[in-house]
Length: 225
Image 1 (tube, rainbow, N blue to C red):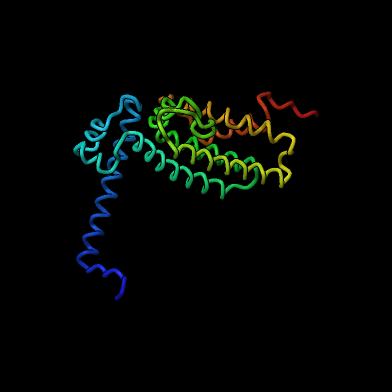
Image 2: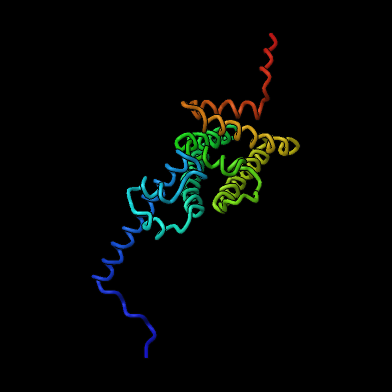
């Protein structure tokens, strides 16, 4: 006797396809609403009921897909992690040289965060630390996607510095100090971006960050005649 399962009929396949489409639509609808609510009122004040109201669906429908608020926050982070990762990768691949790659990295991160600044402001309020470089914490809000985001950013920064050293653009001796300064500069810029009513152009701000990281804050000396 064969153990193979009977294949689905065309009608069954069509029904499953419709169910999958509805499921994806509902999840996107809920996550869009959750992102908006977290950004408007912060994590602590957000509730499943409020998120359901924002989405225009019943609270019970939200629970079908997300049993609690922690999972919702984590899944919102997952969406942003994937979208941000794609943007940063694309930006860096088109840049030549350490200075340009670093500027592309800063521009991509600042630009993306500026587009969803309310959500990231709420996120920073929950964690109280840098979402891109901060060490893992014992926060009561479990956000494994945040740890994954940090790991991915860390791998990317490692690559930038390895390539810069291999190409002779920075010295191995300056790597440690530069790697310590980079997160501090970016975190300060991110904080400004999440609270500013009209954040500065990300490419211009990125260029300023790169200049400070690579050349310091002093004005360049005048060339001797």
